[in-house]
Length: 111
Image (cartoon, rainbow, N blue to C red):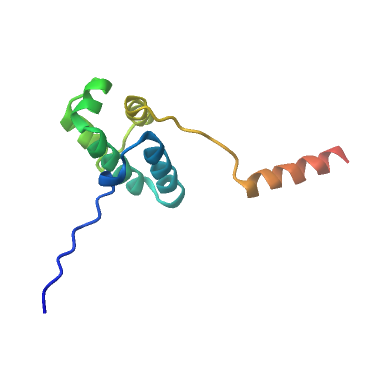
């Protein structure tokens, strides 16, 4: 019987458009924590050329890699700069359950 060799999943192979990157990052943010998000950002950097992103951010490639390491505390400004460099923006919207609570609470105030 022949052995089947499996390769580790590499998300960067599928991140071929800004729409795909935005959807991927949105899903990882919803489902994962800080470590998962940094891993996702690393996959995006790999897909979009880590050196080019670092250049656009005005940092070295190794500095960018270090910033995306799961064990390193990363400043929000670094994440913001990264997203600017790849042409992705963050969009905020209320969770349905939260907005329903506020609607119910504000209705009680009007009564």
